[in-house]
Every structure is written in structure tokens, then in C-alpha cells.
Amino acid sequence: AMHQQMEKQEAEDAFNAAMARTQAGIQPNVNNSENLFTKSTYADLSAINEIIVPIYSAEGLSISFDTETKNEADPIPAGMQRTIAIVSHAAGHCRRHHIDLPPDDVGSQGKVNKTGVQAAGSTNEYARRYLSRMIFNLSTKDDKDGNKDKGAKGMDEQTRANFEEAIEIL
Image (cartoon, rainbow, N blue to C red):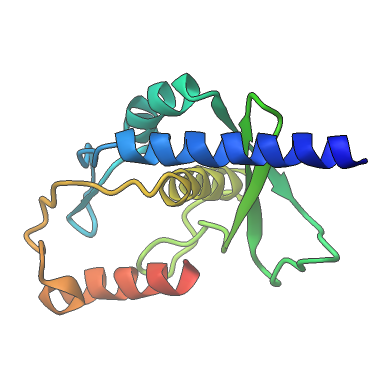
């Protein structure tokens, strides 16, 4: 039992060291996509992965995603979709992360604009992007909508509402 505990601690130490090196090696990425409605830019999942996958995989880390519909220990809020990220290290340690988001089935003007399947897929895509950014502390280095360094006060009304909604979700 003592030997197993030591191996477990060594695996966790290796994971933590790899994560520290990974985060030190990740540079901010560029927003490569634009939301035409809000006139804001963002980094899509492919741009994020282009930056982070080579760095974290070189450190023996991997990330996998799944969804969860029930969790007695950590209940999923009503109306939310839970996406899970499991970050694993070659030494055997893994860490689980999750985010709960509402289904992305309604557009900015409050009208249903997706089928249930499309909404689930869109929500999952958002969740994977947000989880990847949060896990590896990834930021972006450009801001094409003119609101750089102004915070919520420099945004138009709709963008500010979207920003505040996103902050509430996170």
C-alpha cells in the first residue's frame, strides 16, 4: 500500500511538472474567427488546438472529452449540458474538469435557431473550447472589435449582454 501511494504521488508530481512546463510554453493565440452578429472575434477550437496540442503532447499529456447526464456527487444544474475534460499524463495521473452550459439553441435575439442535435453539438464545441482555454490558461493576443482594454464599458449593448452572460456561465 505504501509503495502504491508513492507511485501515485510520483505520477501526480510528474503530471504537475508537465502541466507547469506546458503552460509556460503556451503563448497567447490569435482570434481567427468572427461572430458577425456581435462583431467580435474569437479563437475557434482548431486554432486553439494548433497552439496547445503539440506542446502538451510533447510533455506526455493528453486530453479527452465526454458528456455526462447524471452525477450524484456533483449534480448537473437543470437545463444544463455537462461536458467533461480528462487530462491524463503518461505517468498515469489524470485530472477531471467540467463545465455546465445551457444548450446553444437560441440566437442572440431569443429565437430558436437550431435543432436539438445541432444545439447539443454547438454547446459541446463551445464547452471543449472553453475547457481547453481554462485548463491550459490560454489567452488571445488580439481584439478586432475595438474593445481592447476597455472591459464591458467599451462594448455596445448587445456585446456587453453577451459578455455578462458568458461571465455568469463561467
